[in-house]
Length: 393
Image (cartoon, rainbow, N blue to C red; front, side):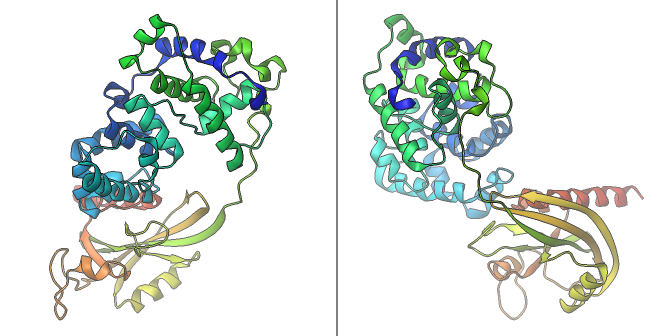
């Protein structure tokens, strides 16, 4: 069990291994507070290789805290498109406003103050504090819990918050007294032992003591001190209670086209995919006749309907099983995007904001201008393919 395991013996072999095996990652090249923060938020629920292009694009557009704080919401959502969990970046912006107003645009070099910022929990605060500032505090994520429960053969349920808190406390105490040979310390970037130790544990969990499949024990610097390996029980750890089953929802997605324009709408400001643009969709698996009836109720005159491929998208607690239809309608009579509609002086975007109203936008640049969640990628891809084919005819 971890509370009886001497963690101090793990540090030196892990850091020696890390010097030779650390991956070259863009956020490691310049471990500045803002860059570390952006990378850690992006890496939540997302693979390293998938994050790289988003990270570069985000930093190019928003190079510092002040730029993030001042970024218009639609642009921010567009920059985050594809990463999912959009509340993460909304919380980042709220925290950036606080940092700009209270700390002069620089994340505080204080673990407790980092924890007070919106969207920053103990793991992210520990990562920023240790990697960017060299503060000896732990950064405990799933990788760390997995490698520690294996090395100590600890069968405690890692989903229990009490266990995570106990691990953080034990690691925190160990890191306060962490010492390594002087030659090893000098070999580390900026001689930052706490930052290197936390990153090395993350790296070991991501590349050797892996989450899916058998661990690569022959490559592990802890192989001779790992109790799970000694017992031949590596796959028994970590112990993790099963998550609640996802709720299945059937949706019918509509690709409504008016010439070269396509209908989208903005989701409500709260709830799933809050404030993002989407293709109109209805609850249930509807037939073509039901879809045509709905389209007519919206005062459109359908000319043609075509069944699209089925698709599904998995959120953390919900799974959408989608059927789709492309519907060509007569000229809808909607104002072009950005132009006020007669009678109310509001643009279509303003009307759609939170009301679920449709706006018609140029299908060629819909994906470039509007943050449409990846949940609809199967149907957004169909749109462009269709227009490409029409252009060739």
